Length: 388
Image (cartoon, rainbow, N blue to C red; front, side, top):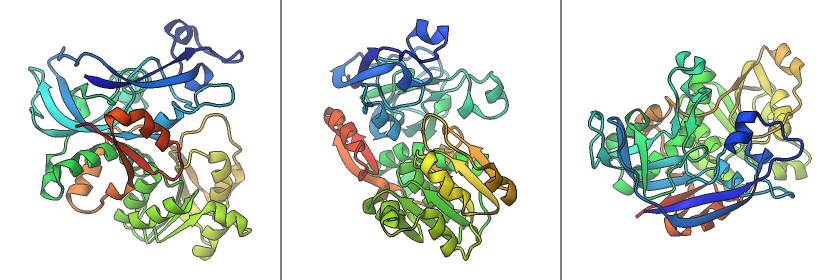
């Protein structure tokens, strides 16, 4: 089968504090500390075989390229990848995917060959303290397809029954091609869903929400806030094209933060102006630039406001603790999507949301390297790979 492969040079930085397990296994919880000179290519591998009774072999139809994939493609001045997440190379990337069930193990009952499905790529252990606490997305012993084990930028991917979500309910509203694209979009959308609702408890109807960062996760957060009954949704993007997408997804107003800076103002000031000085009930950091975004959020929170951290950024950032203490505000960190895909599928089935406008570019698998390069350009919100 045809696959995309990522290789690289294992060369830990001199000051990298890696565990013995990481060094011996040639993997790291923070790829930017050890992997450099990434090489992306299209190659061939054998089709995976069913090995366990609950295995599901999926014929991949659509794969979204995430900012994390782009950060495994981009490098800093020393050639190290930008991704601050666990990675083991070489591997097949891709963790936003949907496809058609091709074959199932003997014990599989929830899906059958021919069914359209979305695929959870986080393979949680089910026995660690996080899993037992009902937080499998925070599993301390998980394998993650597309990062630590082979993912879905391939013609076929092997999953397990617990990690596939049926999409047949979408057939009443959408074409087959649209179903697979929506299935792939469910991954970033469910990241937003999990952070906003499962972790932070959601917002009350009539609430105000500000979304900072209008990539796929931020745009999905806008649609979800609108579906939840937010009275006002403000969006802050880094370019006019993404601001326009934010409006299409349901934002009441969308601003280009660079244009605001040129005009001598900023997101926090605009938020206070638009809310009559009251601030927002929920602020979402989806830009992966908390160092720049948090000061704007901190000055524009409502009393009892919630801050949801969804953007990926390495290193530490300043935090003005009094801003949270005075307002009685809370911060929620969230990662992963286990438990979020099903609600996002249901919202599409009911016609409450439609995330297809997020897709700005489409490429075939043969042009995957070109597609990842396109994803590094900030004007692209979601680049989708179609597998014929």
